[in-house]
Every structure is written in structure tokens, then in C-alpha cells.
Image (cartoon, rainbow over all chains, first blue to last red; front, side, top):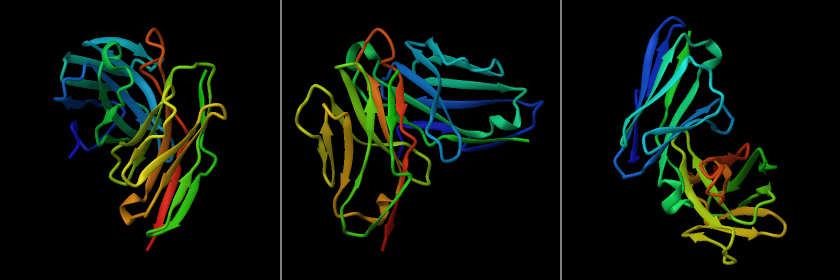
Length: 116
Length: 118
């Protein structure tokens, strides 16, 4: 069983829809991440939150809006997406860099997003 | 910028045999961390093994071991007694030890798809 839980597992949305991806962890990690993964490619970093504050935004288009309501939850709000945004979206968490910075990332099972 | 290269897009191994997956990286840093992640069809990225650059001893985790050659910037993964459940995409990843910048980032290789033949 994964310690990082993502919902939903699958999502199909139109280009005018608004939807949200959710991620939850209860390992006490203070760094949380969103990655995007296209088929047969490695994951690409999108956002990093540290202590509920956005610390890295890898020049992601504004149609992706992250939110970290508390230390256990991470959301990704989606609006006006394009078909090329279809991908696997992975959430991950880790110890915050200042305390145990060689800690590996723990990943969820991902949300398979299809934009029609 | 760091780069990670996995030169074998696909590999296959007979069940119970041993296979080695290659990974090389390029960095100017002296302090960093290396990981192997496994991604089966279930999609979850699972940590297989990790290595700290300042440790000379090669990491081992049960049937998984690495050959870490710091001077050559090589970090290969050896899987012994291969099992059907080992079939997956394997990603080599690099993480900077610099706490001021970049330490969040995992730089991934392109991956090696491993098939296990019964």
C-alpha cells in the first residue's frame, strides 16, 4: 500500500472544465511535489511546497494551480486544459531538505488525466 | 546542470538470472545522492535503492545492489535472482546535496524497461 494517496485514479475532462487532483500523506513530511509524466518518459517536476509554501514553480502554465491547505494535503486545480496536458500526474512527499535532505521521495500511484 | 543517462531503453532477463542496468551522470558537485526507482504498470514510483556520494561502500537491498563508481560517474543497478515481479520501468535519479538550491529536484534518466522471461 502506498503511503501517499492520490485521488481520483482516472480523470477525463473537457477543455472548459474545472477539476482538482488531490494528494494526501500522513508521514509527517513537510515537502510535497507535483510531477507530470508522459507515456514512456521520466517524471517532470511541476511544483514543490515546503512547509505549506510554494518554493518551486517550474514555469508551469497558469491553467495549473497548486494549493497546499495543510501539511498533509496537496491539491492541483485544473482549468482550461489542453489535450497535450493529458498525462499521469504524480504526487510525492519527502522530509524537508533542512532536516534530512537525502531523504528519497515517496510517490503516490498517480492520476491518469485525459483532456478531450 | 546535472544530467542522467540510461543507455539501455530495454533489457530482458530470464527468471532467476542476474541483470545489470546502467546509469551514468554528469555533475560538478561533490555532494549528491543517487537513487533507483522502479515503476511497474501499477504506475507507482517505488524506491529500490539509494546511495550517498560520500559513502564508498556500495548500497545493497536484498536482491538489489549497486556498483557506484564516483570517479567514472557511474551508478549501475544489479538485480540478482530476478523475479517476475521485477518487470517494470527502472529510473535512475540524481539529487543535489546542495541545501541552498536544487536539493528538491530529482533529475531522472529516461528509464530502462526491464522484462523478465519465465
